[in-house]
Amino acid sequence: AQTVTQSQPEMSVQEAETVTLSCTYDTSESDYYLFWYKQPPSRQMILVIRQEAYKQQNATENRFSVNFQKAAKSFSLKISDSQLGDAAMYFCAYNGLRGNQFYFGTGTSLTVIP
Amino acid sequence: NAGVMQNPRHLVRRRGQEARLRCSPMKGHSHVYWYRQLPEEGLKFMVYLQKENIIDESGMPKERFSAEFPKEGPSILRIQQVVRGDSAAYFCASSPARGRTDTQYFGPGTRLTVL
Image (tube, rainbow over the protein chains, first blue to last red):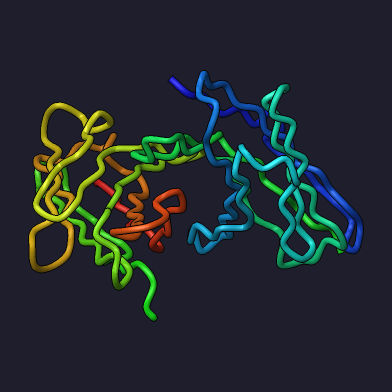
């Protein structure tokens, strides 16, 4: 079974600075999708960014970018120019080819310090 | 274009009662997924349904839990004889009928509290 590991339960960053959240995963599949979701206090799950495993180029969405290392099975999220509204739980997720379910990590709680 | 709708947002039940959680997928989506989030944990898959069919229920507890997605109307997650351990946030997600199914769009969740 696929597993997703987020080894940083909590992180903090100064406003306007950059922070990187770590995620590793375990799979025997060669093609899959990886995601970062943000969960603010409202508990709504908001898609931040997605990466297709067959693409070597790292995905970027405005201030959010990933460092996808397929061989190392690593998928970190970089948030640049951090804003107060970025404070939330961040979940890394894996979706394999069958697409039946997402596998989520346990989350990283990000605090943004004014 | 409305997103995934879930209701109620908050549900309080006493032990032994039944809980019914509803999910309306995004327009044009016929794949529905249910997840449970226990306090301080990530989301855990429960069941995957298409219209009138359960495709994968490998994450569903064997007893008291059931799900359906009828031809008309929302998907329903039903928990019979609730216990305190069922207290959690339940999320529904949906994906399109055709084309890309890699991305799931989540609803706001239903927070179930069992007294």
